[in-house]
Structure formats: C-alpha cells, structure tokens
Figure 1 (cartoon, rainbow, N blue to C red):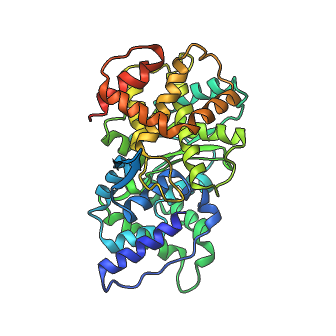
Figure 2: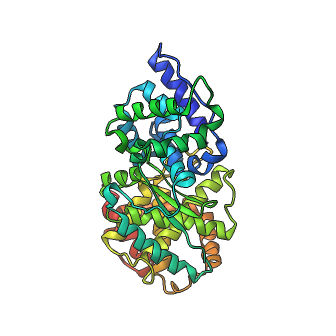
Figure 3: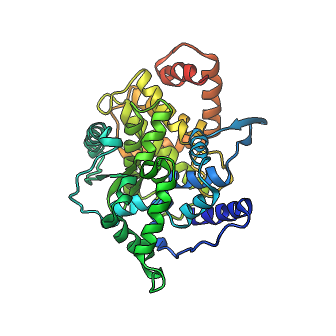
Length: 388
C-alpha cells in the first residue's frame, strides 16, 4: 500500500519543488517490504504527508471533526525537511530500512533494546513475557520474538549495504553500485533533523507472521513520549501487536490483502484484546490513570481516512474498542479468556460499533462519576481526558 502513497507524494512534491533535479528511482522488492509497509504505522506516514488534513464525517446525521494525533505529529516532524529530500526518502524506502535490517540481515541472537539507549527495554520485555503467559491458557503457544528497530543501524555500512542488497539488489549495475546508493542514503539522513535519530526512519510497529516477531521502532516511542504516554505506550504497542499474532491463530486475518472494513476490524480487535489483557487482574493489572493512558494510546494512532483502503479506525473508534476490552476484563466472568469466546463477543460488539462508540462519547462527555461496574471504565475515566 505504501508504494501508492509514495507515488502520490512524489507527484505532489515535484509540483511544489518546480525544477528539481532528476532522481534515480530503483525498483524495490515488494515481497520483502510487504509486511513492513502494509502495517498501520507505515500507512500513517503516507496518509499524513499526502492526505494531511482533517476529515469531517457524518455521525448520526451530524458532522464530527476527526483529527489524528499521530498524523499531526508526523506532519510537524516532516515540515522542516526539504521537499526533494522527502521525495527521495520515500522513493528509497528509508522508513523501512531499519526494519528490513532486523528482519532479513541481523543475527537472530543479536541483543535487542527498545527506545533511545534501551530506555524501554525492561518494560517491553516484562509485559511481553506476561502477555505470552496470559494467552497460553487460550492455546496460543508460539514463542514470539521481540525486535527493536533503530535509525542508528543505517550509519553502519556493514549493516546498511546488505540491507540495500536485499531490497534493491536487482537494480544495481556497473553504472550505479550499492556502495554509491549507500553513500547517497547516508548523506540524506545526515541532512535530516536529528540525523540517524530522526523518528520518521523508525515510526512503525508491527507483527511479522513469517518471522514470528514483533518489531517496534524508536520513532514510535518518541511519538508516545510527545503525547505524554511513555509510561504505558510501550506496553500498548507490544500487546497490540501480540494481539495481531492471536488473530493469525484464529485465522480471521491471514492475508495482507484485506478490505478496508476488515482492516478496521482487525485493528479494533487488536485494541480490544490488548486492553483486555492490560486491565485483567491476571494480566497487566492496570487501573486508574494508567488504563486511561492505554485508551489515549489507542486514540492517538487512529486515522481519519475513512474512505481509504487501509483505514484502521478513527481515533474515537480505537479508544472505544480499548474501553470495551477493559470493560470485559472488569466484568464478573472475566476469568473466561478463551480466544474463540472473545472473538464471538467482539464480533457482536463490532456489529453495533457506531451505536456503542457514539453512546460512549455522549455519556462520557456528560458524566464525571462511575456508577456501576459495567460503566466503571466507559463513563468515568473517559470523561476527564476527553477534554484534553
């Protein structure tokens, strides 16, 4: 999907830049890039830069202003980059190279760290271990690897060149070598704000079914920190991606080529399963302000391109699904964690998505107290942060 965004972006930028010098565009291996660039965060980069605008949509006869925090942040981060450099960035898939290195080139036994200087490594590994133990009771026995992606890896030519050969190998020839390509890429990165630490290089998180691994880039952590969510943002990311693994186990979403409605359902279900685990007494056992931040984490990565083939749910829908998952964990029969049962309940809830989410927004906007167990999460905790 990202290749279409890149073409649109390139056309737009060339019009803006006027008589820009011609760029060399190499043919990439789409198969190698598919799992990386079909992820929701990769889609967000393209949407933000090509379709960077607010969307107004009809809701029960009215109009709701939809604004995505992640896309606003991406636009801010890209605003100081020269148009020609930004076009080259996407032509050469720089946003995918750190992840391709980890998937296809790096030693499987390489030590993993998450965030700048490994800041979130302990949190990520601990919550992932709890998540795997929790879902094993539902029959999910696979041991999922964790991989951290870092822009700094591209500064090492011993890492960059094999990665470029993997992605562009068929495009090199005597007149243009991989070494020359690596030099051009490193020159560009060094012109970016922050150089190899620029978050556009690593703003992604996804589950690779082929590799049996969850990958999270440093750019994602920087975004969550900017939203005041660094205390739980990493936990949300790893459990949301682990939920995608559970979906493969259910065989509901086993193809990268899914419709827009399936794409939205896939992401909302992952939000629900993530929150179910994070709120559950036997899982993450989060409550109060921390579970509120999980809802905000889900909200922050929603998008507003409701007509786009890769639409992953609006911010309100993403928050709503997380609240439903936590509410289910808080209910009297929360000990039931069978995946098929959860899937059945989610499908029933999803069929009434528009009603449920509109009801939550209306009640939480006017309610400041928690009244019953079933509205403990959906009314009280949402009311305070909706005004943020």
